[in-house]
Every structure is written in C-alpha cells, then in structure tokens.
Length: 331
Ligand code: ACO
Image (cartoon, rainbow, N blue to C red; front, side, top):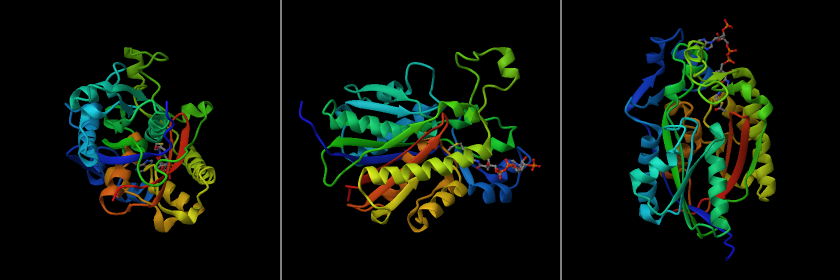
C-alpha cells in the first residue's frame, strides 16, 4: 500500500435549525437576563431543533452542503465519522443514519465520542486513515441536538447550548501541507465536572433516575472554565511545536466556541486576539458541531484564503482536548 502524506479538506458545510432562541426568550423561561448571559458568555442567541429533527437530520443537511462544496457524489465516500454526544439512538450509529439519508452506500460508518472535542478527534482519525492509504475520501461531521438533554429549569446550563451541525470532506492529495499532526489528550479523573450521568449502563433509565434529573447535562462551570483555558492554550502551543509552525505564521485560530471569555483568555495568553475566529454570539455552544460550523463559516465568509495556516483547538467533557494545524488549500 502506498503511503500518502497530504490529506486536504476539499469541502465544508454547516446547518442550523430554523428556530432561534434569544437571550430575551430565555428571560421568560429561567431567572436570567440578556445582559448577564451576554457579559458572561458572549452569546446572544442559539438555534433549537424541532421535535421531529434528530441529530442525524442536522448532520445530513451539513453533509449535503459539504458534498456540493467538494464537488463530489455521496457514492465516492469511503468513510463517514459522526462526532456527537447526542446520537439519534445508542445504536445504530448516527453515522449510519446519515449514510442512508445521503446515499453514501460505499462508505463504512461509525460515531466518535469525545464530547465537545469530537470533531477535531474525528478529523484526526479520518486524516490518518486516508494518509495511510486505507481510504481515499472521508466525510467528518460534528452534529448535536443539545436541546434534548438540557435541563431547561437550570439557568446555569440551559443558556449555554444550541443545536447545529458542521461537516468536512477530506481527500488524499492537494497543494501544501493539508491537515498536519494533531495533539490530543484526555483526563477521565475529571469526568464528573461535565457529564450527563443518567441513561447509560451506569445509571440506566428508571423512574427514580428521571426523578433525580440525571438525564440532564451537569456541569461545574468554574472548573470547566479554568481547565478549558489552560488545556486549549497548552495544546495550541504543542501542536505548533509538533508541526514546526510559529504562532506568527498562523493566519486564523479557530477555538471551540464554548464561551467568549474562554476564547478571549486563550487569545490573550497566545497574543492572537487579532486572528481568533468566533461565532458563539449567534449559535452558543454546539459542542462537537461548534468547531466544524466555525471552520465552514470562516471558509465561506472569506476569512480563510488558499495557503493560510489555520490552528484549531478544542476542549470538552471527559475531559478531552486537542489542537491541530492545517494549510487551507481551497480557493
Ligand atoms: N443568569 C443569571 N444568573 C446566573 C445564571 C444565569 N443564567 N447562571 C448562574 N447565575 C448566578 C449564579 O447562581 C451565581 O449566583 P450567586 O452568586 O447568587 O450564587 C452567580 O450567577 C455566579 O455564578 P457562577 O456559576 O459562579 O458564574 P460564572 O461567572 O462562573 O459564569 C458560566 C457561569 C458562564 C457557566 C461560566 O462558569 C462558564 O462559562 N464556564 C465554562 C463552562 C462552559 O463553557 N461549558 C461548556 C461546556 S464545556 C465545553 O464546551 C468546553
């Protein structure tokens, strides 16, 4: 098997559901204000999926846009990975549902669980499978319907999240360095700082579990904040070193869109405030979809230009975190 070194993103796409939930709407649901939410998080609004939309429906819409952008047919896909923490069902995988909906009958499909870090982890997995020659073309999706397991009575968490999906098509070849080496890490000893404890095999579905609200996302916000800033900053530095790229060479930094204060703290530490990409104001935190949606938006609004070096970084439940660097090769 021939070793292929360069793997490039040849198309991106994203999708958000129609319904917009503003901070003012949230004022009517919980004891909060637009001013509190915006000053603490940078968020103004988020999109919420309709009851008949599942995560695979969001992912499918993003995938269709990415395939058109890439100029390829779904049947050309060899692999589909969906990063999600809100799958349609425990099984089969959300990726299999997407495969069926887009008609990618030649692809093998699986989901990847790394919470908010999922898209970067999935990008790395797909890239390596292409780089070693195992597959030629892959579709990587980050998709979430966060609204289904948010406790809409908890003002500390319900204001933070939104629904959406982003997708990227990867292929062997392309000009420049393409997707470079990633740095990724995890620390399972901190799992209880950000998790949804109920509904799985540890705390199976029962009336008691539901009465205790264990089916909802739980978070110790201040701890998450501290770790998120430290881990994302460190992993960007490590990824730059690993790929022998200096901070000055990076044209655009795309961090996980968790909270504007987390993003600002990273920007300050790395001295990159003039090059950091954010859209958290419009979509809030869409977990594994956030990086994918931001990448697509940066590509489409002209921020990314051919030949630009881009650094991306993520942090999420687990804890999980990571960063990578890529050379943008689309015009
Ligand atoms: N509206 C009004 N007041 C609120 C709200 C709200 N929505 N939520 C909390 N408060 C109150 C609290 O009850 C508390 O009141 P008290 O002092 O009377 O007890 C006060 O505001 C301060 O609460 P804190 O939780 O300490 O507020 P903080 O400034 O830390 O902001 C926040 C909370 C926004 C959650 C912050 O900790 C944060 O951003 N953490 C990071 C979490 C994150 O981004 N998670 C995303 C998932 S992880 C990921 O994607 C990487």
